[in-house]
Image (cartoon, rainbow, N blue to C red; front, side, top):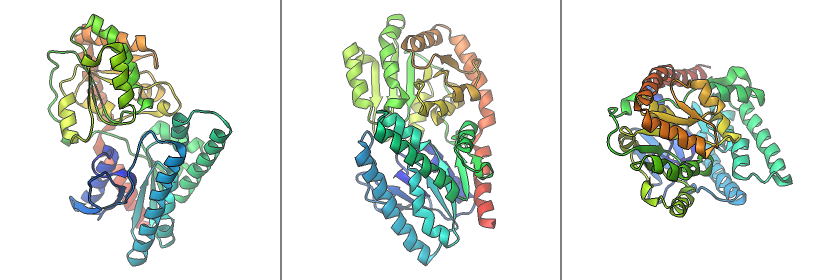
Length: 386
């Protein structure tokens, strides 16, 4: 399992669950990951052998620094995998994007018969355009290069897994062979969920996960003065870390709502975060209507639904493709007033909010983790059998 990010701390549940699924299916799993300060170079966690490279993943850096970081990680990972292949080849190398060119690290193993799984978490060209939206000549050239690398990665891989059907269709439109692609959703493993609970006391608006600009938490902070005017007990709780945290704190100070915003940064065990949000009044998915977000379908949304926390979400196409207005309260994406209206409506009509949460919980049965887990294990076994 090759991932440009720390493991297990800071890694999305998707990667952790895939590793658990592989080990439970009888595969011996090694992980090559980046390193957080203070972590060991090597350790064994639940029978998974982890090698951490001397690369620290940083958010909010410029394009040149990003290229150095991602390229350096890829070069070191390539040398490690090549050396290990000469000693004892792997059956499968599972490469998680971004970056797409990380698949280069698996080329030498492939020459010795190793099969490659390419896991598309996000569309790399769209992520770059979101981060660096200059639209100039260099940006257009970078987009062409990234799209070419994306197609090449799809061609080199023996199997491609991605997070939902809209992504699968988009990858096919970008030149990926349809027969290679399997959907393995960012579904909830209900075994790790705490007991759902009924909200009490303050009107708690929660968000958990990565705190970066494209997740648009600034809209929630911008809506907070109006929400507080209608609901004095309202407060926003954010559990996560990312490069947008300082700006959110500054925005709250400028709006005079710092006392109504709490941001719990740093690592918290996943179970503790879920326990914190279990009794929330509403979970919010405020994504703006930018290119990258049109395909966003986050694990946090599934976790709110599993815990029967009512959800207010931006009415983007992929969200609407998976849930109905009877299950989530949608608002016009990017509209602060529409977001405030939806949150105020949730507070003043709790019966309707509970009804939507119950319906979303029923819908979630279609997106169970065990279904995705079985598809992923089947991909691995088919590659080994081939």
